[in-house]
Amino acid sequence: MNYNMGLNHYLETSVNTAFPAELTLMLQNALVKHLTKARDSISQNQVQRSHESILRSQDILREFQATLDMKYPISQNLMLLYDYMKRRLIEANIKKDMEAIEEVLGFARELRDSWAIAIKKSPA
Image 1 (cartoon, rainbow, N blue to C red):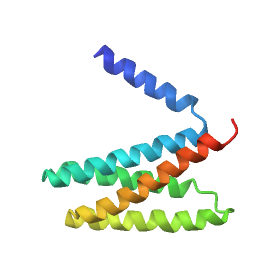
Image 2: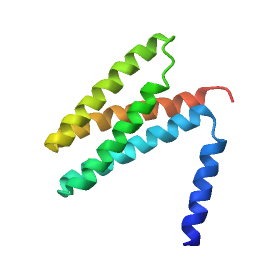
Image 3: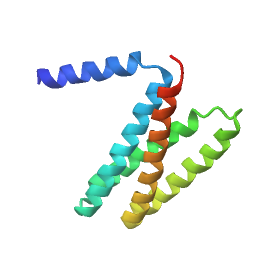
Image 4: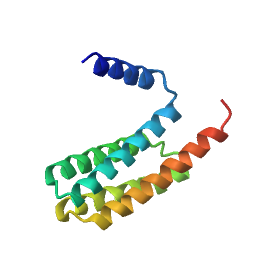
């Protein structure tokens, strides 16, 4: 029990002290984690678990969309990409479609990896 309390405190502190760019990376990592869980759950025929993981992934994508600053041209492209990813996840959830999950997971990993590189290259 103490371990969980300590872990929760650590995670809460990490989120509360992170810079916006780091928070975005944390969310991108969470997206990849939930998509991986969804894929694994589908392959193990765990319907409810896959459903929950897909819903969490969609929630993260909605958060990304809500926080886009639309004054930048790239935001338009990201909005379309996030919308496409959400639509594919709806299809994946209905049909338990592994290919759709893999496609979205590929986009999520690419976005996460690009963001991680951008953070490393940006001045502190």
